[in-house]
Length: 456
Image (cartoon, rainbow, N blue to C red; front, side, top):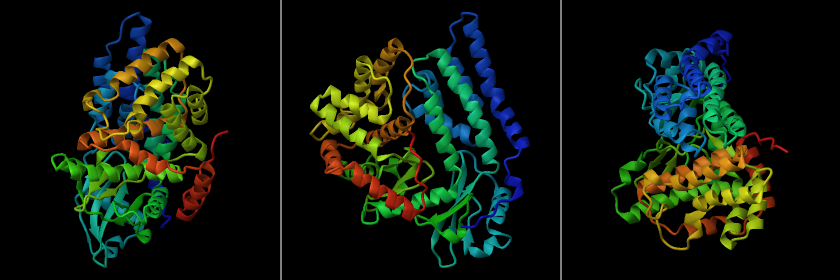
């Protein structure tokens, strides 16, 4: 990959200050207002504050938009009223114009960049919170997807992560049941990784190796000579949006859902890796009903001990073995596990694992509407946590929970009816943590993905 690093992309103080002003004016003002209401003994209007927060964030590109969408998918990280409003933030933003595209391409590939393509479309094919994608054609006629990072994103990340602390402080003032320190640390680490397109290219190579012999799942190929840390060129994968298949026959929707199940659970159970962004725009469906996996910026890698905890918790719930469940939560990283806390965690775990524990063909929600999916369980958990005092979810829990809920949402949108018990047991059959650790180390090394330094 090219290593160009033009001066105008440096993380300058001036750019950070400008970003603080953009984000802080809206978010900081809301926090001050909220604190004042509390101080005067007034009951804050959560609905109104949530709407104002959405307005404050809605006009901004970059990490703060990504964080807002993320918070809306993790139960109880923010108040329910906040989650509803944040969920309405559009994942696609108006694209940057052609002058930006020319500057970015010239900065990354040099003055003669256009000669390296047979064709390059000026209009973006897709635009999101951190970058946009253009269709192009290589000199050999191959269809390409060219992903360009928006300008000043490093400055935006540093500024937005500081402002994110204000959003969490709003939540702590409303309800201190969940300590969000580890959640913040996790989001901070993942967001910083998403800006490194060289890392994303390595993630693509990793997934390509994982699914090399799986015909149902396609992974793009990285065009190394046309990629840098802020420019990622890949093969274009033809497919249609997943939601286009909601009215197809059930057997077709089930085939798509089975491919999605494999795309998520196989990498996790065999390599300790998940695709951590469950947005529907990150998948397309091929004519043969196989799926294309897109966007590898948010990939979460877990230690084998955590994966073992996930499998062990399933076995514990299956056997109704409370002590075994407690040991699994300890592997996850939950500290100070009282009997009461174990019971509360089991409420949420039984919801997450319910389709896999039920040995029959069913929908993932089993008669519960998409709007109500998980809300009853989340409410019960939160009410109990209020009595137990602040609980600090381990950082590994954040994206695991988010991705699991997102995958469930995919199955709900498809209206799929599967034997999730059979599918899950097939993927964890003969699970062995030591084998996973060796397999993971070898795969990460071959793909060029840095192995994380696991916490003690």
